Length: 534
Image 1 (cartoon, helix red, strand yellow):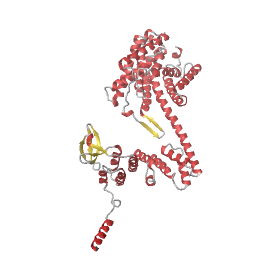
Image 2 (cartoon, helix red, strand yellow):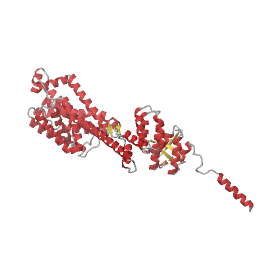
Image 3 (cartoon, helix red, strand yellow):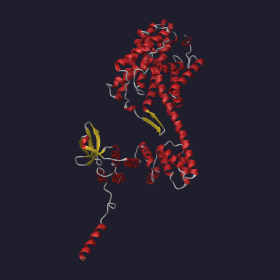
Image 4 (cartoon, one colour):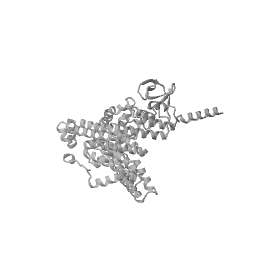
C-alpha cells in the first residue's frame, strides 16, 4: 500500500511538472507556415501572428499568398507550397526559401481554407508589415487597410510610425487613423477633438464611426453634436466630389460629341451639306474596332483600329461624295433626304453582315481601372484616355488646316469658292477630300465610342442629333466653337441628368439652344470676313 501511494504521488508530480499546450513555446515561423496546411481556423490565427511577428522577409509573401489562394497543400506529401499559374497547372515554390519545387496539375493541389475572420486578420497583419514598404503608395494603402481593424496595438504602432514617416500623404492617412482611434478615448474632450479632425473626411470607415458616435445615446451631448457637425461637413464635401465626377463624365461625353461634330462642321462649312449619314460613319469606326479585335490581341487592337477606322470611314465618305452628294450641291433638302436614305442603307448593311445584335468590344488592360483621387472621387482610365485622345485629334486637325497645302486650299474654298477656282484650286477634289476627312474623323470617334458602350447598327443614331446641335451652337465651320459647344453640352447634359433624368435633360438642352440661336443665329463663334458674306 505505501508503495502504491508513493507511485501515485510520483505520477502526479510528473503530470504537474509537464508543460501544457498553453505553456508550449510557439513554433518556429517556418514550421508555422507548414502547420497552416492542417490547422483549424482558431489555430490558424495564432500561426498567422507568429509568422507576422517573425520579422522574416518572406512573411508578407506567405500571408498575401494565403489571402489570394496561392498558398496551397500538395496532396502527394501534404507540403505547403506557393503556387503560380502556368500553362497546364501551377509552378511550385517553397514559401520560405523561394526554392522551385517543380510543377503540379490543378488536381494535385488543395487550397488552404480560410474564413471571414481570418481574412480580416490577414488584411490587418499584411497592412502592419507593409507600413515599412519603400513605396509611399503601399504604405498609404497599408494604413488605410487598418481603418476597419483599429485596436490599441495598431494605434500604438501607427503613433510610432508617425514620427518616422516623411511622406505627407501617408502622414495624413495616419492622422485620420489616429483620430478614429481617439473616438473611443475615455476623455470626452479627446473625442470632441477627434471629431473635429475628422470633419470633412470622405473615408467610409471614418463616416461609419462618426455615425455610430452621433447615434450613441450614452455619449455626452457635446460629443454627439460634434460628430453630427463632422458628418455634415463630410456630406458637403462628398456632394462636391460627386458634382466633379459628373462633370468629368460630361467631359468624356463632350469628347465623343467633339469627334462626331468636327466632321459635320468641316463638311457643312465648306460645302453646305447636311449629312444625315454622318452618324453611320461613327458606327463604321466602332465595327472596325470589333473586327480588328477578332485578329489582333486586345491590348494592341486600338492602335491598329484607329488608323484603319479613319481609312474605312474616310473611304465611305469619299465614295458618298463622288457618287451622290456632288450632284446635289445647292439643294439642301434633297441632300438631307438622300443622306438619310444612305444612313438606312448602311444600317441594313451592317445588320446583314454582323447581325442586328449588339457586339461587345473589349477594353485593353492599359485602359482598364481608374485613378482614385480619394475615396469619394475616382476617374476611370477609359474616359481619361478618350478626353485626351479627342484633344489630340483636335490639335492634329488644326495643324493640318493651318500648315498643309490641303488645309490652305480647304480654307480658300470655304471662304470664296469662285475665286479659289479662278486661282487654280480644284474645288471638286477639295470637296471629296474634305468630306472624306470629316467621315474619317467620325470613324475615329467610333473607336473611342466603342470603349464606352456596346456596338450596334443604331449606334450612330444616338449621336447624330447631338452632333448637329453642337455645330449649330458653336458656329458653323468654326472648330474652336465646335470644341467649346461639345464640352459645354456634354457637361450640361450630365449635370442635369441626376436631377431631371436623361430624356428631360436633352429636351432642356434643345430648348436652350433654340432660345440661344434666336439671339445669336450664327452661334457662339460666327465666321467673319468672306466666309460670313458667302
